[in-house]
Image 1 (cartoon, rainbow, N blue to C red):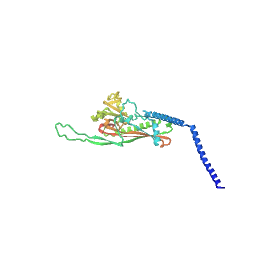
Image 2: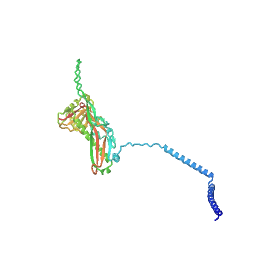
Image 3: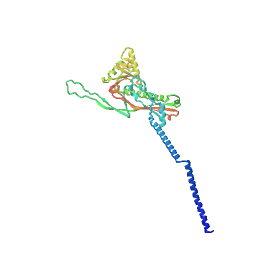
Image 4: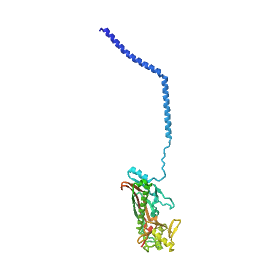
Length: 373
């Protein structure tokens, strides 16, 4: 093949390659021209404007919605003023800690209340359970958060006297101030009850919690009587089985005047029964019923009945006169605890209540007890 022919073939190939590029360019131009014909510049501007308007509208709606949310007031939690269910309290603490218990505030039961007042409910429980303990109703109540507390006590006599013209008065005083310590003790009660009853009886938990508190009140009341019986300021009745007005007069007027002026008498049920017999037999008219007081008076002094004091029998303490605010002290911890446990006895709930309190005589001279012969 000659050189001229080869050059022509190369030229044809080059020409063909240029033709491909040209074709691509033509296609691009054609597409561009077609798109330009389909979407004109004015249409693009219209689309852009419409999109901008829609975005602005959506933004305005979002801002309006946010403003409505901002205008909604902050919700306020309103606590219903009604006692909490003991059962719900048990279940809440059982879920949280694995043990069902409830802390119950007992401050209300230690405060003086009018006899005409309604019972005080604490977490669904009757707050007057401790009213069966008259010592709590007349004594000094002290709230404490410790395991013990101390109170000062003055003992002895000053020994001063009027010696007329004598200027050098001999100091025969035996007065001294000491500290009395009162230890906080635990009063507890327990009851084992079949579990299936819990789902059958409405208020089941509340009933047993109340029963445990009532039992604790009973145990404490007996302990207070034991403290009173230990008083070292005592007189002995003339008889072992009968109380006379002479015995009561000796008891009342044997107490120093500064304590007697604010004193109250506390008598056992049996002692009151005997004194009422004396009154109706016209052998003495001193024990009378005072309608305004709602109870008896003896020698004009209020009489408080204590069913936990011993019956009239040999060696028993059956009466006490005292300025109770100075004579006897009850120290309360802030609350008692009632628990319900299911793991102790199979098939039964074990209800357990515990209260911590202290008690004891403060000023021995502020009270006097009567012991049967």
